[in-house]
Image (tube, rainbow, N blue to C red; front, side):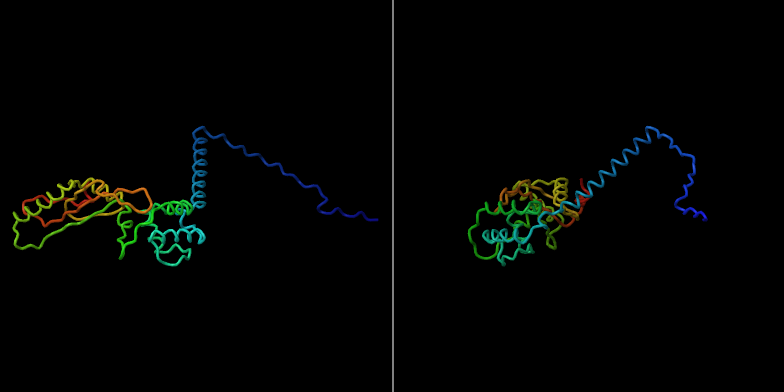
Length: 242
């Protein structure tokens, strides 16, 4: 009988002996740099995952079941007059701004917002429509622009006298001319101001009392714009002062 040839897989594999490449040890400086890169990369990934896990605005994740009792409380406080539909639309948003006197509620969970609304005192009924003070004062700044001109009967001396009269009226009411402080208040409120003029500031000019405490204080800033008077120095724009 003829001997059966061996199958290919029955043959012993040929092992090739290749030279082993040995890595050179890195210097301590390079090792420290690699460790720093790994640490920075891990930190960046952790921050990215944290941003993805937590919504930037908690109120955007409220459910209809959470919004309906909030709307009922807004209706009790006379700040909402539509149906209880569980939709946080424009009118519900406005009601919450008026209730809290600003945008503080946007960073709170629904349970906290509901509890603070329930603790709020319902205002007395009034006729007509109330002004939206919460929207007006939510950044803590009330700015007023006062400008006058086109009085042909006034000469340079008349303009100077009228301007001084307005300045005296402001200072007698506790305002002080301070362009630097006005620029800080505008920046804090994320507002911009431009134009030549004089800025008068009064700290804690009024206390606004929304239904939900605490009661924030509001700074007041008056922008006085007058026609240029010959011989008088012009005031630099607010955005360039500081």
